[in-house]
Length: 286
Image 1: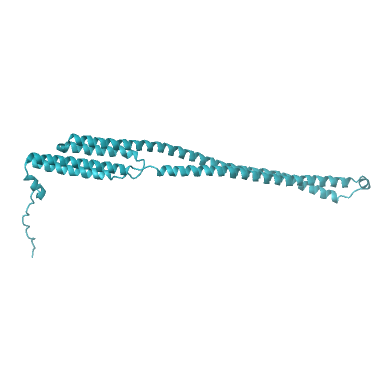
Image 2: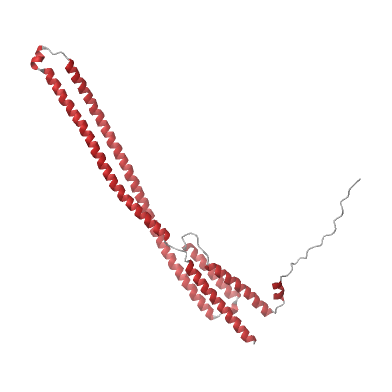
């Protein structure tokens, strides 16, 4: 038995235009002047809201001066948009008020940018000095290690040579002690003289060996003192530079409070201008 799927019915097509909102219907019922006034009010509200957000805009990382130009351009753009799209509120009082406030924040940010640039130069100079001090410290440590190594190497070589000479003299002394002397040699006492000479040479070489060890100890002590003194001075310099660099990094801000205040003042000035316009329109209508 065969199965045939049921035929689908015709779908109802959706209307091509969306249903108008209550606000749109109300706006369409207004007269042309009233509709224009309602549109201007919406535009003004959006601009005021944008100015409010602009006043609370944070700049995350320095240099903050890189953000100031963009922020001023955004503010100027909003003011120009208000003047062009809400022209009925743009009276002379508003223009002068807004112009004064804009120039004030512009000068404020310009001074901050110049100060930040100067601090950036100072910070770069401090970092360069720190790099030189670190390099000098590394060089002092390297030179100290090299001097210590060279002093020990020179002492080891000298000690090896003296020890070799001592060993030779010691063997020679033993050989002289073991030799049988003749009657003539005993009369002249030559072996005894030879042994005495060998003993004197041995004592002299041993004295040189002790002196070499003492000289090494003195040289190592002097190297240690010089190294400690230079290292201490360089560490004091590097610590001072690091503190100055840290202070320079902390100094500086994004002028948030100044920008917030001027945006609030401009916000109030625009609202006041709109109230003056609305009051004038109401007076003329009556």
